[in-house]
Amino acid sequence: MMSIRETASSANIEETRKVERITNEMIEANLIRCSYFHGFVLQELQLILLKTRGDFLLRLSHQPERKEAKSKKAGSNTEVLPLTRVILVLSVNVTCQKMDITKSVYGDLDEKKQKENVDFHVTIEETSGKWTAFYIERRLKFASIDDLISYYKANPIIFKATNVKLIRAIPLQAWELKGQSIDLTPKKLGEGAYGDVYLGRWKEPFCVERKEFYQWCDVAVKTMKNTDSRAALMELMHEARLQLQLKHKNVLAFRGVFLLKKPILLVSEFCELGSLKDHLQKSKVDVDEKLRFCVGSACGLEYIHFKGLIHRDLATRNILVSADKTPKIADFGLAKCGMSYTMRRSTKIPIRYLAPETISSFLYSTKTDVYTFGLVIWEIFHNGQEPYTKAQPHQEKAVSKNVPMKGRDVKELIKKELFVRFNAETPAALQKYVSAKLFVTDETKRPVIGEVTTFLASLAKMDISKDRAFYTLF
Image (cartoon, rainbow, N blue to C red; front, side, top):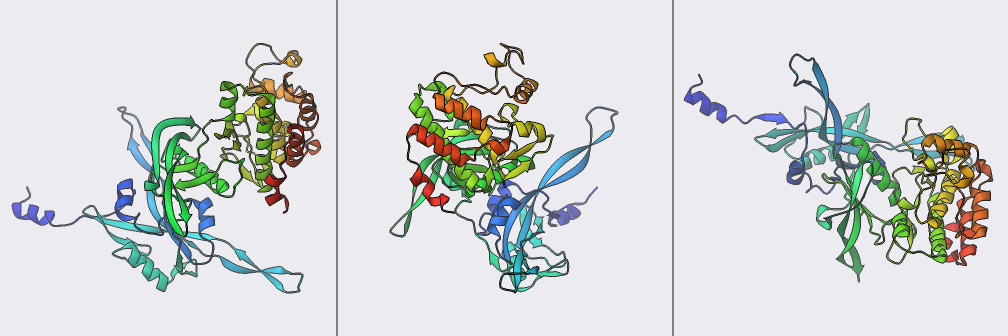
């Protein structure tokens, strides 16, 4: 038995241990005060933040960890359960200059930048519930994060025979929102595979005579269902990075992303009338207004393609409508950079919206977006109904009638070029154009979206020259 003196002596010994998992409480107490702390920012957004050699920031990283745990069933074997820990990381830009072996037009060697970031795990020691020591190299421990940063500004970190020196701390950007600027309400607007969308309030900044003021406005806030899911976090970051590039009246406006602690929040413009699908189903919309929805959506897609993106998930459910009935393309979770993209076979996809070449070869391109946009036009004139849900009269010999279609039925119809047909309400010229130009199996015969926009605008008697002027010059 331990004596009274021994008990008192052991009580005075402060237990020091490494911090293996950083919680929201720890973030609040120790990290949010750092101007260069960016929370759960991932690689996609770091490339935007860390631009030149020596730029650095602090962030948090989900690290998978496997730990053996016995099953609750008696006599069963030990099983390995996956766990996740959150650690502190110092990310630094180590861009180096490389000489191109080819000659430039001036006869000199071209100097090109090889952009690269490296991550250093900042180990944290905790004593009696307080963070007391920080280090990257075990031999050098510091009493605070600021001390660690100051040291490595003066002295390089040796990494793979390269000296890595901290030069410029990168502060939070305007699109990296702070918690006190967002107020989440219980009203749910929608949901997706990885997250739910709620109505929220955002403290929007604005300037008057060089003075900054704020006003609260409604926003849509996407949250993560599983806060430990790296896949969900990566999709949210991917969507945020793409939306940062886009600014057009027919594309949903991006307000920012809250990354400092969980839950991670993606904040976008709030559209009062909801999705175009819901609006068409709930309201009586005449032909002229439907044409205007087609033109606005086409303008948005034209801009998205101009910015070098393929949307890959066009449908009226992913087009939102503002109070003034402006359509805005949203949901960039599946969007990809570039002119084409080959999908992995294992990916789950909404088959009824796929172009023929995507079904046969798993290929996406701007031309597959154009095909799918033809289905958006069809949905608009069928009041938000999804295509290929039940066989139309001309399709009944190929598939069962009066029963919901399955994926194999849709494939069979596309293979036989038995595409959906429009109702009588749809202008005859539009029916003919979509059927002859967009619903074709040879993608090289489909027009680019700009040609589609021009046709729709002429049909609706709308002048879109001003909307195009700022980017068609390039």
